[in-house]
Image (cartoon, rainbow, N blue to C red):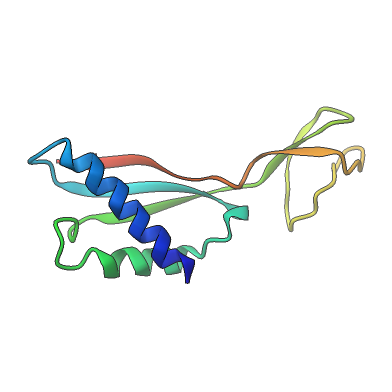
Length: 113
């Protein structure tokens, strides 16, 4: 379950940030995850909740935003969403595309008090 390792890394990053802001309490950590990142959100939620028990982060919660896979066609230059992992242009049917989003994984926001 690589979600446990991801949750631990999120917690490590958050703790490093909070160490520079003493007295602040984390309320929420928001992460953006691309569909192609192969993350099961339910497993990441579970892992995060399990790892923050009995820590200063125990009253915080994780918020996940899934980023859809988007691409641009190198032939007709149109941008489109990729659904069902069909990597061809829906306009000209070319397979010469460049993926623009959908593989990211990053912390986008922290809410602290």
